[in-house]
Length: 331
Image 1 (spheres, rainbow, N blue to C red):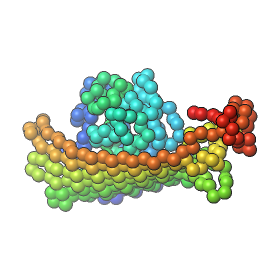
Image 2: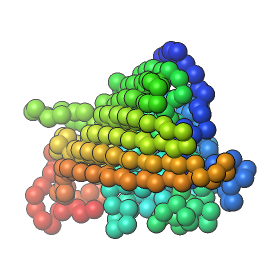
Image 3: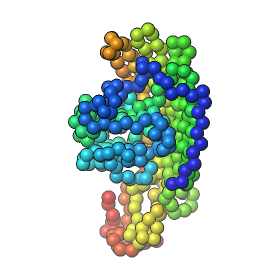
Image 4: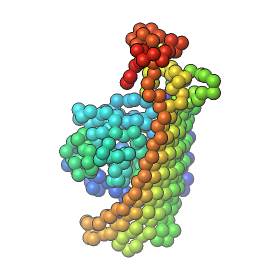
């Protein structure tokens, strides 16, 4: 995909006080000091790439691999060190140390992934070193670090556009007012998709997605402690489908999608609220307590099955679609 980027930074400062550093699964250590294999992707690297696809961002990390499903990074399949990548079920995913995913304990399939387009950094732990980060650490752990509250006025705006009406807009602004400090961040990205849905009467030919995300943090700082409230909301609408093609249609155009799949749509809605209390107990020890609430909902409309003549193994087209049970294909 060809992309063009426009970046603006105003009243910019990257300086952060020690007490403003976000929660890290590295425990304040560098990647060289962490017991086990650790990697870190920082803010500068993420802004340079402009990626909103976590699979692309992780391509540069040794021992981490993915099986791209939609080409957009919405339904992730991430694995580490030979462990199955299927729907990222063997990797513990957190943001600021808070578990992510629709149902981490009962059904860890990552049908929804946090918006990495607004992240400040990504921490990766592989192998046994990740065992203390959560319940799904067979392969390792990934922690997404959200935007930190700055110690002085700090702002940024970036815009990227590309083929298939792709766009990615990212902005944040923060500052300090006495004992209060804050940051506000907005991110939205989308594309019409690279697949071609057959036009039919009144159907939607959009094969892409739209993803909108916002973050708000407010902190009150005291002499040796602070209390912080964080709110994060993400909405995502995608138009991917499980409906495939007959062999002949795939040979003619692998990017084709049947008109019947145009109604396939997934709506994801995610909200998370965190109340954090941090107190310095000594120059080298501090106490951090978090209370959080997350809410996730998904509405997934999709074609359940389709009927194709010649059981789909020989050449066939949509003009041969039949509703005879003997010609049913299930997947």
